[in-house]
Length: 149
Image (cartoon, rainbow, N blue to C red; front, side, top):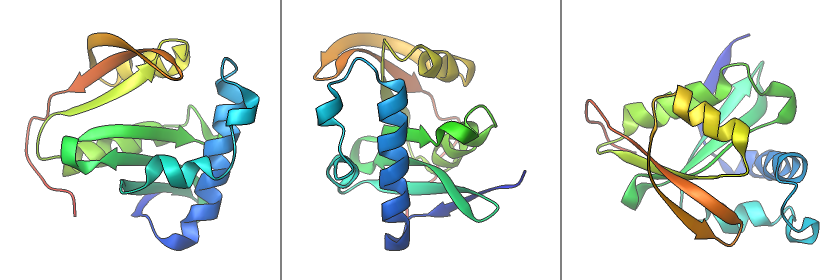
C-alpha cells in the first residue's frame, strides 16, 4: 500500500468533509449527533494548512494545522484505513515542515487517539476542558527547522 501525501486543493473538500463527519460519527459517541454535520469541516478548518493522504489515488485522510501557533487542529483517517500508518505519515509530514515545536489537543475520551500520540512521541503537558469534553494538551519538540508553505 503506497501512501501519498499532497497539499489540499478545492477538489478535495467534499471528500475531506465526508471523512471528518464519518470519523466523528463513529468514534465520538459522547457528542450530540445533531452537532455532527458535513459543513462543520469548512468551519472547523477555515484558514488552516491542510495535508491530504491518498492511497491508490483515493483520499483517505487529512491533517490540518493552525500555522500561526504550530497547532495541529485535526487529524482524521477514514475508518477503513485506520491503523495502516497513514496518521503517522501525515504527522511526520507536518513535523518535517514545522519551524518550531508543535502542539495538539486530544479528547480524553478518545482513547485510541491518546495512545496513538503517545506512541508517536508526543508528550502530555497539561489538561483542560473544551466544548467537546476534557482534553490533554500534547507537545512535540522539533529537532530541526522547516517552514509551512
